[in-house]
Image 1 (tube, helix red, strand yellow):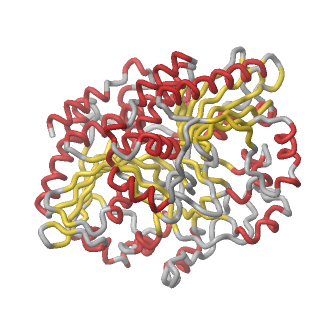
Image 2 (cartoon, each protein chain N blue to C red; image 1 turned 90 degrees about the vertical axis):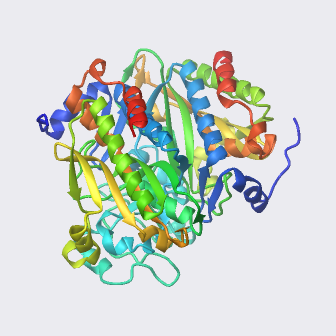
Image 3 (cartoon, each protein chain N blue to C red; image 1 turned 30 degrees about the vertical axis):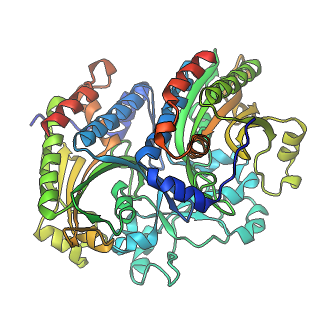
Amino acid sequence: MNAVVDVTDAELLAELAPVGLGWRESGHAVLTGPLYRLAADCDQGFATVAAAFGAEPEQHPAMIDARELQRVAYLESFPQLATFPVGLDPADLDTFAGRDPLDADGAVRLTRTAPVRELLTPAACYHLYPHHRGERLVAPAYLTTVNTCFRREKYYRPLRRQWSFRMRELVCLGGRAEVVAFLKRGRDAVDALCRELDLPIRWEVATDPFFRPAQNPRWLAQRLRPTKHEATFGDLAIASVNLHEDTFGAAFDITRDGVPASSGCVAFGLERWAYALTRRHGADPANWPDVAAAARVAGVAS
Amino acid sequence: MNAVVDVTDAELLAELAPVGLGWRESGHAVLTGPLYRLAADCDQGFATVAAAFGAEPEQHPAMIDARELQRVAYLESFPQLATFPVGLDPADLDTFAGRDPLDADGAVRLTRTAPVRELLTPAACYHLYPHHRGERLVAPAYLTTVNTCFRREKYYRPLRRQWSFRMRELVCLGGRAEVVAFLKRGRDAVDALCRELDLPIRWEVATDPFFRPAQNPRWLAQRLRPTKHEATFGDLAIASVNLHEDTFGAAFDITRDGVPASSGCVAFGLERWAYALTRRHGADPANWPDVAAAARVAGVAS
């Protein structure tokens, strides 16, 4: 594998601002001009790969009912990542409106809030399982969705680690062997795509970022029997393949041949692909690869 | 104008569920299958119209710094609409993790939260003005962006009134006459598009949904001198053209010929277009119009 030269955030911003990278210190990127088109091309490419799997596209909301996430104990496992969408109590708006809405530090002086029942989408695929609740699959289902995802982190870095970012996922619901075969094909598709894009990646076993991992039996289970593999560019994961076993099938009553369905996903972080492609091929758009063409090759190869 | 037959939410869901409408009672639509493709075609169509204006696409985050919105006193004017993204205090996660995260009613039992400094995007174009802060325009700038927008409402209706929805905007920053001419062209483009789509609309003078409007001088100003016109299908606004005068130019130090720039926007609510097209042409995708072709005609006409 070719060496990947690390870069500071300041260097990255200086290089990529002229091609359309903006950055909000609170953890959000703005994409315009060539970099906007590169990220759009990447997602179009991932959609092309998904279409080669016969995946049906779905568009899901920006937030999800906390009760649905609790069916897989999300808030016990990842409370540090959660962002909650909060509105003011409609019966107490006068209190809010009666004083300066911001404090001297620029923080909102919230008054009484309405009950909080949702989380902003933490990963694109969480929406799919409750949406397919109760289905009796007679063949594996292939689905794809792209969404803005939200994760609170200790620190943020442009394109590499953001509070909000775009994630495209390709998901299979089916029998365990079908899902395992899907993940193999998905990993091959990522390999083919990276080969076409001349993007050096390595596959590494990974675990999800559990809160207090050593005390969480699910983290221990992931350590003992790896279910998550990440495609890393340098030390940055740009895609992952994940075997959920029947966690979601059991939680949402989805069956295949009379038993809880297994599921698995292949996930792509769009801003991270824009990072990797510009680190690999430089900041001049003239040298950027044709992502659509690469995706067609990768789709065929998978 | 042809009559637009009203429909209850239950009727709408029964008609459109088979073509891909899902609904979360908390105010969010899920789009799959034909309806997903119709909404995607609509946005592609609006992007085609935007391209005919030479508009540069920009991708902005899902949230915006409250201090930026306060430069135009957003929270005084629309506190009832605001949704704030809230994370737990990282120093107090153990308290949250030490008990059941939901109450018996399914609401999240929040513990101490981190300071709140952002609002979830209330309208797609708000991001553009701080992003172009300090620019000295020597020609009008045409921009376009699509984003998920968030508005708390007293009640929600599938496709018609949602907590989260998609909005495409086309924006001009420039001299006042340039912006007025742009809004005229934008309105003509909406007319041409609706003609091609056989979608009966009426233009109506409107005001923004101010909190305590009678006490807000900005609402009074809008009443005296209309700056907002909505294209309504039945009683539903599916697009609007808005003259901001120099509100944003002055707030964000954007000038044209040495004076604060004027701005104006043409906004499209994607779910509402899916509603209007399916009310007009029925639930059978075979009868839906070719939105891309209609948009090309509308782009040329404008």
